[in-house]
Image 1 (cartoon, rainbow, N blue to C red):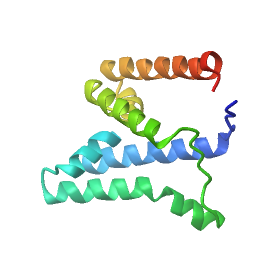
Image 2: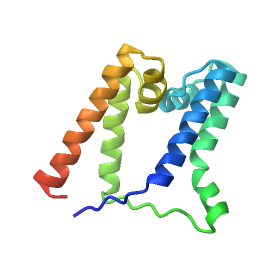
Image 3: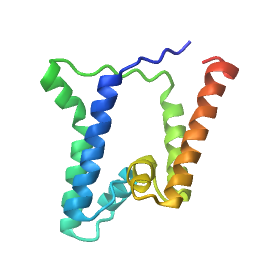
Image 4: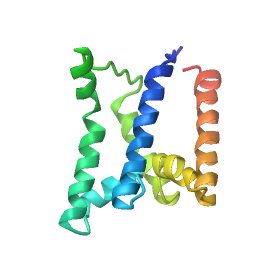
Length: 144
């Protein structure tokens, strides 16, 4: 049985940092902080300046464990209870979903909801409902 660890302070801190980053990006660049859009624009930038801010955002996203290491002296423990093949399949499914959904959870859930975008509200409700059903099936039907 998979156990979920309750981490309210870390979750609050992470959420606050994501919200702060979204507000700062909107205030300084006039851009919405959708992770998949940022990465896609990094791979095909409109200009050199466009590439620089996107690269800085991605560097900030992936350097989080190094900040934890600097603050605590140890890397965060990450346990992934599925195979590499399942991670690849999951990544492909997510990629298809963000393409058809015109954005990801960070773009719709954090930024779109804050702007009261009807499209983002529907997308976020869909993400949350799908997540709830998936967790129920995995934990109670399949027995993971």
